[in-house]
Amino acid sequence: MSDWLEVVRQVEPLEDVALDAPLVKQMARRANNAGPSRINFYTPTFKAYASSEISGCGKTAWPAVSITGGDCKLACDHCKAKILEPMIPAHTPQDLWRVVHEQIDLGAQGMLLTGGSNHRNEVEYAPYYATIRRIKEIFPAFKIALHTALVDLDIARRMEDAGIDVAMMDVIGAQDTITQVYHLRRSVDDFERSLEYLVATEMKIVPHIVLGLHYGHFLGEWHALDIVKRHRPDALVLVVVMPHYAPQDRPFATPDAHEVGHFFLDASAAMIDTPLLLGCARPAGRVKSQIDAYAVMAGLNGIAHPADGMVELAARLGREVRVTPACCSIAVGDEVMAVDAKDAGLQVDVQKVIEFERARRRPLDIKIVRAEELAR
Ligand code: SF4
Image (cartoon, rainbow, N blue to C red):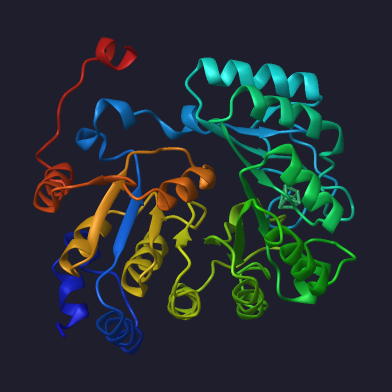
């Protein structure tokens, strides 16, 4: 078993990134026992390696649509509905019908459908089900990933009947987080029951756990992992809270990268047969390099928007590396569909990627671009 810290040091962008040595050792030991596994990176950076069919931008392929536009009654402390703002609004079923046609004309293969919550953390999709059903009848290949929020059994079945392909929900494992961060009078059991109702359907179920959701600190994450493990969904997406939306009077700390790493290791051990993905939401900068290095070493199956050096690190650790050139920051549905497909992503020539990454970082490799070229 090679010394993984030594391997990390060989990757130029990770030279000065501080990692927890005992944790890295545990990760190496686990990988040694589990054997080699594939990892898929979702990034626009490697477009150079893409074939013409899949070089399209993920944003066009998987637009995000909100049935409430930028409105959300909950206004949780970590989000304040900011996540909805850049999405395409579809305030009525007629709007949704039109938006889907427009997006298919632009090359969309599917969409993420979401909306702001009411005070009970439900998104009110009821008026839209008939339209979704018609969309799926006319465009069966157009995939719809729905952010469900909390549901009862009847709502879960209506989503299934409408033809939703992928259902996603955040699982929260601490009552204090539900009450304080989400301002919500619902229980941890309500989250578990929603997941239970969703997995009872034929939809693909992809819960999310937001790490550091309690003002940047871990509180209910391990309990959320237990809940997810009990219900055996199709994939689990982990994201790390982004503190910059938080209001000044209720600030969020940046989650501790080493604690995130510990969680990755536990999640990867708990979800052995379930694809485990790191979604694109996580803090930027040095902490992102730490988090992503831990994700690669803990054996996660997919990473959206990896930090510099991750492809090289995965290759050096002997993982089979694939790259999907998608740039959309919210297209988790795409990740799930891609992981599901046997030929997901491009199998890349790792040596070429390493050379490509190095050339990109070389300071002298600056191409002078004229203003008129930039405008093109
Ligand atoms: S319910 Fe969702 S969209 Fe609304 S504020 Fe909370 S996290 Fe943001």
